[in-house]
Length: 171
Image (cartoon, rainbow, N blue to C red; front, side, top):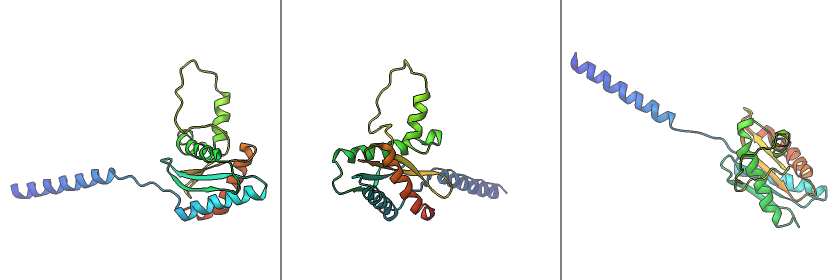
């Protein structure tokens, strides 16, 4: 009987440790490279058809670039700006479930000024021109940032319309 109790106890320990180990695994979705490249291609092409020379950047939730495309003649500084927009949307929209850098900027504009010293965060901008990418479960899985058009609203329009084209294939 004592031996049986020890065996049962040992089995429970093994099962419990397997359960704890499984809890330590985190799976996070992101766009495939193929779909991310299609998205930046659609975005740059759409903006070009409207006379805008832009960069488009897709990032995952870690802010890692998955796809980057420079439209013909797009200004070099717009590469960094498109990334900053995408990085900001991917990293700072999660807490409030916002959909774009514009939503964030609008919310911040309504907030009372603060006397608390602000530390600038690297790679963060609140300029319009980035939207989040959501999976079929409506969870944010990344973002796309666009820069180079003569207004962030035009950058955002190209991104939003291009995302609609591929949204059905994001599972």
